[in-house]
Amino acid sequence: MEQSKKFDPAVEKEVARQFEILRFGVSEITPEEDLLSMLRHSIANNKPLRVKCGIDPTATDVHLGHSVPYRKMRQFQDLGHIGVVIIGDYTASIGDPTGRNDSRPPLTPEQIKENASRYMEQVYTVVDKEKTEIRFQSEWFKDVTLSDVISWAGQTTVAKLVSHDTFAKRLEEGHSLGLHELFYPVLQGIDSVYVKADVELGGTDQKFNVLMGRDYQKHAKLRPQVAMLLPIITGTCGTQKMSKSLGNTIGILDEPFDKFGKTMSIPDAIMLEWWKYVGNLDATRFAEIEKGLKEGSLHPNECKKQLGVAVVSFFHGEEVGKAMREQFENVFKNKQIPDDVPEFKFERGLGLLDTLVAAKMVPSKAEGRRMIGQNAVSIVDGDKLTAIDHVIDESFVDSVLKVGKRKFVKLV
Image (tube, rainbow, N blue to C red; front, side):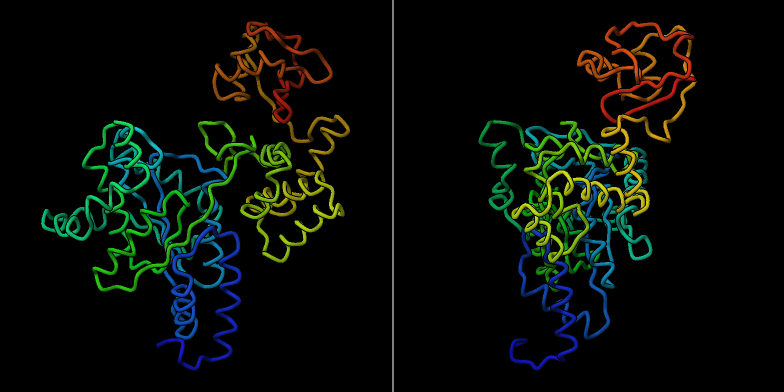
């Protein structure tokens, strides 16, 4: 057995170093001893591990919550391993049933391709593109026969599939459950066979699906992958998981100033959670921050500003991160206008609501109405604008329009 072997001390030292880095910020590693064994073999034989993570191309916008497993993939890559991103073009035709009470409409191949392209543009801001393989499920599933499907079905049981929390809940509550939906975890598991994954990354809500990969690899006489599960982080609201539908996200495509400002808006109660999962630090630095907050040597507001710098710096560079802090302090402490306020050539005579939408200050008229109703729209050094149909005429030229605390545009 491996425990009885004599290992190279240099290899063991590197195994310990990599394991210490990789286990920080992870909710679960199943099984840990397998990961240690894989790292040992990888280092001793100079053979990178293949670290898999799938994307659901039904969505196009990536937020900080989505980035958590890809940050872990980047850590693997920085240690010399290979990231394998699976584009779920076949599972997208089913729709991930996780957390849903009904079936999700399937996408067309054209929609999937377009969504995947936009998604990966954002993921590449996190992972190392040169150490990333992009694989579409259609590479292997397009040639699958009915015999293959029956074989895969024979390697699991209906009882096991319907024990999946989501499936069990839907059946218990009397909701429909399509036969095709039972194949979602099956297909995700088969992916691991085809790409020969050593490790699969996923959220804690994906545990069932990730462990299916281990089962199917065993049947295929392959070394079973290690399941590495990452947390579902809390959104900016401080109470619910980060979700675009809840409006509590920080998007990868958000402007640097918005990223910093939204980070500053989070409750102190979740600050350490964010430091741990999106703060880009190691266990030692995290312990220092945690100790500083507990002992009072690190003020929560200063800690949050440092977090904002860390979040922005990860995507835009350290200089930009520091500049956003300075800009934020100028705007909110000294009540100045940011240096780089964009200009917008507005249509004279247009109503306030239409102007906000045209200037992309709000994503929709519904959001514009909400912001106006909350007295969140104003002219800098001027009055609040409280009427939806307020006419924006020539008198507004060179005025700076402000929405909320962080959005500014100069009207020209």
